[in-house]
Amino acid sequence: MYPDDFNMNDRGCILGELKIFYHSVKEDDRFLNLDGICHLAQVMVETGKNLSFPLFYRILKLALVLPVSTATVERCFSKMKLIKTDLRNRMGDEYLNNAMVCDVEGETFDEVTNEDVLVRFLAMKDRRGEF
Image 1 (cartoon, rainbow, N blue to C red):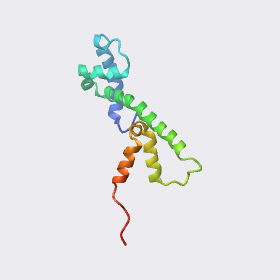
Image 2: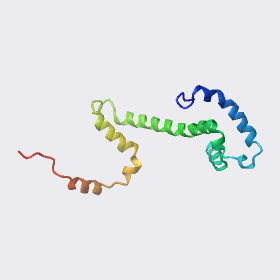
Image 3: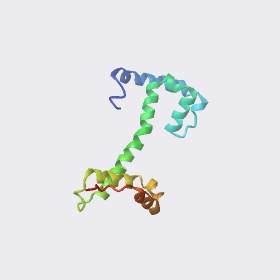
Image 4: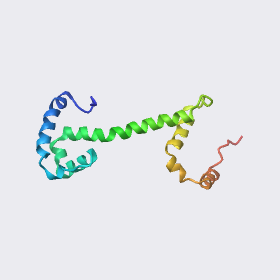
């Protein structure tokens, strides 16, 4: 569990809340044949059980978010290894950040054509100073 999400009182109450939740839903037809924890969370909201069992619902939400955030971080580090090789080890943070955004958000950049980039570049103001 995440220490910031549950105080000591919450940690002491969670098992009792879980037992009460189990007895509350074991004969409720709406909770039969659930596809997974995502479907369980959806039915809890539809039936108002998320308000009756807030600690269990909070654990459920954390369980739904964790795999996505872990996979995203792992994917980013994998991409960074491909971009920042030994040959390109001296690149600055800003360049690395820009290259990472382009690579990680590849689906978004696939929609941008070379012509779009060229038009945008040509429309930019001249940044040279007049002497």
